[in-house]
Amino acid sequence: MKDDAQRIAIPRAINWNRLQDDKDLEVWNRLTVNFWLPEKVPLSNDVQSWATLTPEEQTLTIRVFTGLTLLDTIQNAVGAPAMMGDAITPHEEAVLSNVAFMEAVHARSYSSIFSTLCSTKEVDEAFRWSEENPHLQAKARAVLETYAPGADPLKRKIASVFLESFLFYSGFYLPMYWSSRAKLTNTADLIRLIIRDEAVHGYYIGYKFQRGMETQTEARRQELKDYAFNLLFELYDIESRYTEELYDDIGLTEEVKVFLHYNANKALQNLGFEALFPPEAAEVNPAILAALSPDSENHDFFSGSGSSYVIGRAVATEDEDWDF
Amino acid sequence: MPGLVYFSSASGNTARFISQLGLAAARIPVSPKEALPELPDDYVLICPTYADGEGRGAVPKQVIRFLNAPEHRARLRGVIATGNRNFGRFYGMAGDVIAAKCAVPLMYKFELAGTTADLARVREGLSKFWGTECLMTA
Image 1 (cartoon, rainbow over the protein chains, first blue to last red):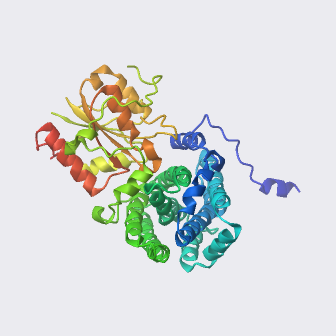
Image 2 (image 1 turned 90 degrees about the horizontal axis):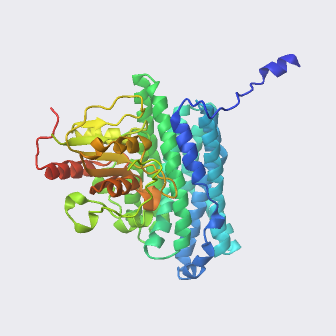
Image 3 (image 1 turned 90 degrees about the vertical axis):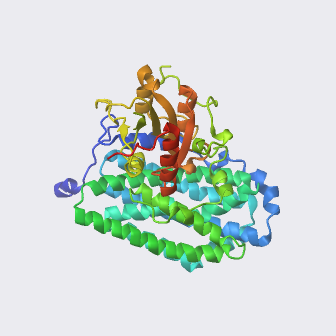
């Protein structure tokens, strides 16, 4: 009995007033302030808009959302918990527990959309489709391999950043597209909340990856970089086929691929690497960019266009910090 | 000699942009204990955005502290903001806040560490703005 008791490792009580890495508290605060639940979005306002979609467009939308649900389920149940075991600081582990839970909220949200807009039969069919779709299953498998026990913690973070910052976007494209055409705008509001969360997740996991890289030898850093680019090529290949299968009929495949390039570049930047796709291959349709960040003008004072010269727009300036 | 001042946290996106840009730039330190580097006479500030879901906390504390000094504000001629479109309408909002507070133009926004297109745009834009093309570091 005494031996058994000694074998159980008791964690040290977490002290948030003694940080090893300030980024842990910064991200914890950001994530907790951003907490939300799908009930806060009036999805039922999209019922009429949903009825204006063709049956094919409806099926596509439900399928896209079941695909996203699978990724969120993986990150909730496997990815974030696996990374908790790799955490260097206790605060990192706590942040990842928030990541895990929010992924469950995201997965839950798609079911809220379904129960508001679709019939049970349609939804059941789409879930069956997701279980049988070879491309969706292939991307899940590629990521899950790195989440397996005993896998390399830094490779796990690479795959995780690709999931958070790249793999979701073949799916996120569609609600942004509908939103740019003034359709399913409340659903788009909900998706934007998910996109915002995934951006913080990708940023944080990528940051922890960069900290981890600093402790590695030059040879090992090169190995990890090669691994990252190879995995991205593999995932891009799968994503291309997944995109073609979903979007060929509606004629959007090429536009979605540009969006994939753009997000692949951002995923690489989260890991501290340079972009892969040249800017001209990653020039996303401005309507989609505007749907991503509505009311955020494209500021280019250098171009001399009048509207970009903004001084004095009303913004939250937090006067307790500023002295003037 | 006009120049650049920037802030970049430990995640290093803005620092990577600056190193690619190839222009002399003074970094506002992450830790308040570190001394400020020597500043250019006039400068454009490049600043990342950390806004939450309500747009709060957009400007990093270090940058606010820096701008609280009147002698630093006096030389500020414009601001370039970085961010991520995934944060929706608060994309690059540090630039909007600083432009409003300091009454300087918000010159440009770009995402994360920027693209080669952003690098070219900022290089060209700054060069025109300062009316000189001899800003390249040796």
